[in-house]
Length: 265
Figure (tube, rainbow, N blue to C red):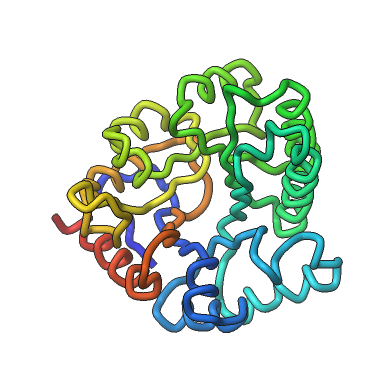
């Protein structure tokens, strides 16, 4: 959908909207959402493994093939899977088994869907070693890459990635969360481009303290696009994150326009 930037590393800068807000806000089925996304010009999508109808436990092998067929008929590529389980569930004795079961099932689903990357938020600094090991072992065995969000524990995440030094582990960054914390997404992508697995696109209005459509907030879209283009560790399309937006359908269209316009500035 998006043309390449002026300086290019041959990376994929196609936008893949997150489907959960499109489904929940529009009260649509996954199939209906895919059809709508295709009609407004998107050719890739980010699915959510915690969304009803996509949860791994709800999909047997035939259902998984059927979902892939729906993607094909909608002319949509699958960028990856979101698996945003509450971080506290990975450190609580009462919930860690359930959280790990869901995470490992999502890794298995990602393998069946073409070994697409799995994005998840983890409390890296507080995560038990056996939990870290189980996640990496499963991802490595399935040929799936974990794109870990730990924006408030960035140093711990970087140290973990450097220590294990495995293709199965990388990071992802949420620009809105970084801007809200007075961090610069452009600088962080520039610094961590080798470790960045999944590029994510969203924006934040500091004056109102809210997430907003791309181009309406503090994100330097042109510079951010350039840094994502040059991030050598990044895989697949850029995830257009529509979470937390009141009108995700409109924000998707506006975000795509701001993304395309960035190369003409």
